[in-house]
Length: 250
Length: 258
Image (cartoon, rainbow over all chains, first blue to last red; front, top):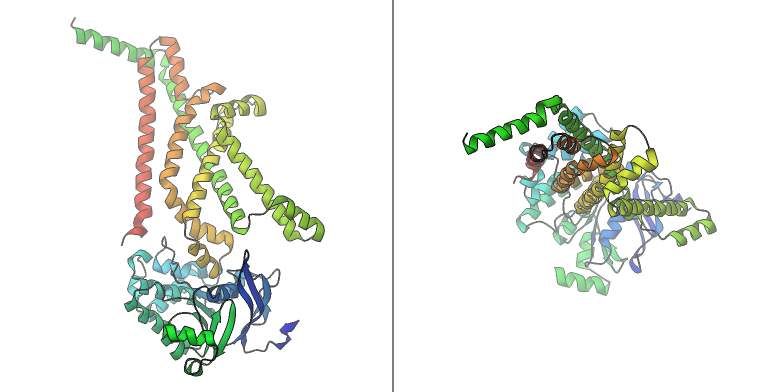
């Protein structure tokens, strides 16, 4: 058991993570420890496996090999209650994935009520206060279709927050947005970071990585090739692939 | 007597003979009742079977598909329940495929007679008809609903699961409502077809409204009135069904408004 090293301040520990899609090896052995309160930003070219890595963390993808521990519990163990685990790990998707047949309010309260986390009244009060924080309280009774992309993504973040997660995963949250809407989403995420949330963010927003991230990982071809705190990461990249990547995106 | 007067009198006496003499309207009433009971019963059975089959098939393709012999071999070698599960799921999918093939591949009137004369030989022919039409309709509904489920974006399932909903809760609360909306027109089609298909239950000695017309026709030797009457009744029922379909579509489209 490698798990003996887990201490109280570790949020997520990943050892020897591999993922194949058929013959295609997308993750080729990832070892990574994420501590509570860290804001880890994952960057890399498309096809590098960064989204797959993120999706393995809440088992939206089943790892082919390797083990993942969340707050000390092995989630890759057989018989692990995946649903319970996911209630403590919020996820935000590139394409928002709001439920189009539910109002904004129902989008936020549906799961807390259904899973018995909260009573309806409590869930709605919480939803309204969360919506107020992102300035969309008056949209509570409308449907997702009536919102802009930036508004949808902010609602999606709030929907995840309604479950009071301990970790938030972001899978390219601004990649599907019009440029002028990127800022509003990033500022909600920055606020969340300030509140001390543990965050893992896959993104192409280098500014966000620099300013909000506490650590940046560079992935390519299924491996983490380099990582550092943001200042050093961007000022002094070492791996030739990273130097090349940064020269193209910065 | 003018031409039109005699035409009217002939028409009038035909109507009287068809509906009034010997209280023949009661035959039509009984027939209509049977048509409605069979249609409604088969509808409920069909939806239940159809949704269940569709969900099971979609589930199988989400976790699988598996190959029967390799999975069975792995189970026998390792004894791990995971492989036994794969074998069972594969068998289930095979069984469902057989169901779809057989019941969509043979005429419903033949199926109905098999139920009535081979399987049940019961005296409750209406119940037999409900079962026969329900199981037949279920095969069509299954494919319609499956198409609807597959048309719902995968991200919807992922969002539901990522929030901590179980697979079944995600299906029920998130996917199926959207799938239902997608396939409402196709489902209505199926129900309209079902309503009209019940006109063959005369084959197993149930007096539905079509059979009622045939019975009356045999007594009065007049075909025009009973047949056009029955045709109108079907038309009216289908029109009512279509009306409710449109209403339901409008309600479900509330979330589409921009």
